[in-house]
Length: 64
Image (cartoon, rainbow, N blue to C red; front, side, top):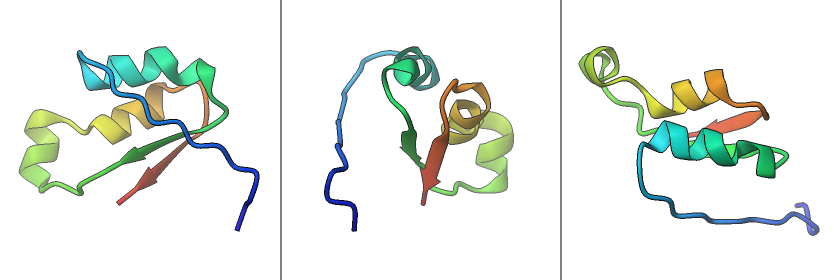
């Protein structure tokens, strides 16, 4: 267990990927959740977590 870890929770309005990417440089690491949608959801809607991982300037951990 890491005792000196800090956690910030931020709520933003707007496009999810853009909102996360715009704030990425404020942190050392990002953490995003993934609901593990179906193949059809992934193909037609896209995947926010995947887009954040691909576009982020900092390392991103995806939790499911």
